[in-house]
Image 1 (cartoon, one colour):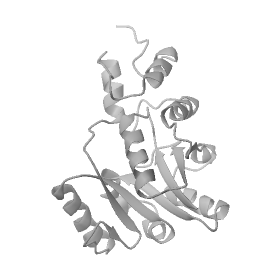
Image 2 (tube, rainbow, N blue to C red):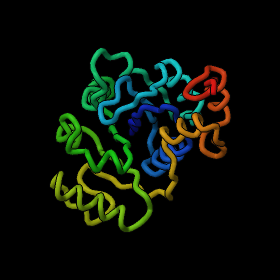
Image 3 (cartoon, rainbow, N blue to C red):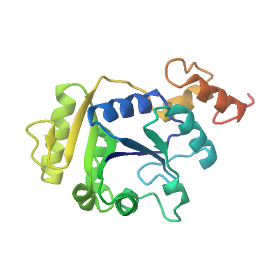
Length: 209
């Protein structure tokens, strides 16, 4: 079985997330994708982090594909959300299956800073979502060679795969900023998630001015 691993803060999940993972699941012919919300982000600061229960609930709304499974394994762990711990745990649970770690190009370009990144390269395939343009792809190839010692003449190399996506410029921080500024989220977030955020007064919803 081919299992995708898609971690993130999902604060909140948006259509950039769902669009990317749908494309990856189809392209890589994955049998299952584990959507894993972080408990403690290790690579970025987040001052407006919604409670775990809310982020899990929103992920269940956002990721509707029956192949997608929401996992709280990182939230349930007492330690920080280091990816190598998650991969090791999954290797024990799925000893005969292939693991595919799905990340954005921004995360790949700092991959050498990840905890035990060399072990990750040995234990799973790193699948990178890239903008569909030559400059972005060339930057990823150069990084792979210069920092990781991986030569990538094509989009695939040893344990690294680059997937080309049309640009979809949206981020969770932008969503939170739009909410705070009372700007529209049309086309950026699932309407059911907007309703959930309003009902639970997340981020800027319910704020008095």
